Image (tube, rainbow, N blue to C red; front, side, top):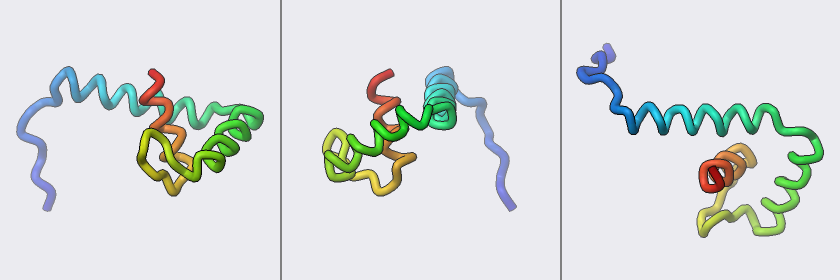
Length: 69
């Protein structure tokens, strides 16, 4: 059985959740042209962004979005 959370989320945690939700929304709303640009950059940099390897395109896009916003 999962124990319910004892405390309410902090303002910082709520802000982080919102940033992640915004990143997911950005990914869902990408145009095919923008998606193609991101795929080309992802492959050009050998799946890396800021020194970390992203095996999935989704992870790469979210990391870039969070770094840029």
